[in-house]
Amino acid sequence: MKIKENLFNQRIISIDALRGITIFVMIFVNELSSVNSVPEWMKHMPADADGMTFVDLVFPAFLFIVGMSVPFAFNARLIKGDSAKTIWTHTLKRAFALIIIGVFMVNAEYGYDSAKMLITPAFWGLLAYLMPILIWNKYPKDFSVWLKNLLQYGGILVLIGLYFLYIRDTGEIGMTPKWWGILGLIGWAYLFTVVYYWLVSGNLWAMIGFLVFCVVMNSLNLTENSFVQNTSWLSFIAGHLTHAALVSAGIVISLLFFDRKIENKINWPVIAFILLFFVVGFSLRPLFGISKIQGTPSWTMLSAGICTILFYFLYWIMEVKKQTKWSEFFMPAAANPLLIYILPGVIYYFSKTFHVYILPAFFSEGLPGIIWSLVFSTIMLYVMRIMNKYRIQLHL
Image 1: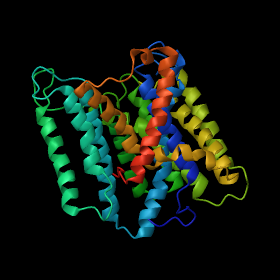
Image 2: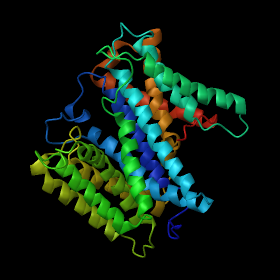
Image 3: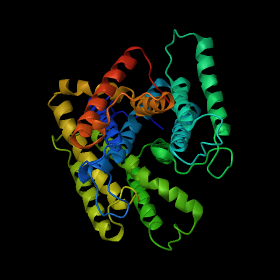
Image 4: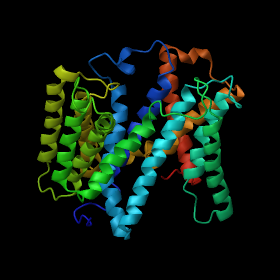
């Protein structure tokens, strides 16, 4: 792969802003999920419903942003002089780390026999959420080498131990990937898309072709008695290509914005793709419906269209009009997305383990619960600002 000369080498602040906003909303809706008596439009749509709310857009927005960042990440590594082996190794390590963390998170939620486990499920969950912070923290250069090794390898040993301490509700020892979790799904989508991106050297038309392939495979996987649905390994791949469609859509839009010189003020190819996303999404709706739970192609394409509009709006405000001051509120999350995703889980399992319940039940219902969810999301951003200051940052 060659260095893309037209691609910006610096960070694009509008991408960071979209990432930060997405994470803020993600924390808000995750906290809101435990609140009763909230409006239906603030919840995930049921699996059998044909429609989506803004809550169903959070996960695809994160996948879309992952895709938008890929060309910059590869270009930076090529400019740095990294070899193909180094880039491949980094890609595989990042993907499998996300998958592993995702599986541990899922198993912390359910599927265990608490009566047979040597430690409480809450303490098991607390350790499962804490260890990735020790293992994948980006330790500063002046940090003690022996202490760094102790924390990282100790964390790995604890995760291995947690695997064998886990007793399933069937009585068997060890975890299973009941499903891959949000981080695991991101890991698989990232793996398939980035490997292809590398093989085609980041060619725009090849990535468009991959996006079309993902949508077709997704559709076939949801078509009764299709050869994809009836072939287990093909169905497995197609299931992850559902989310890879959103990552590849992000790559395509990123290349259209930054890997070419745009003389006109309006990016017409991007406008065309926005229209294409919506046309494909609504055209496939009668066949599959719009469903985040089922991962339908209508949901992925409509989400890609909405995400592109949101990014174009931020691009116009921040890159064209140079209005960036307002985004500082969200930047701590943008700089440390994995840690801020994990941290609420650490707080939750810490509270369950040590029976620390500060929040009154009043805040688990209706409007007070909505307000608390917003406050909690804001607190997390300020906590992240402190952690960034003290260089506690996860880096896969």
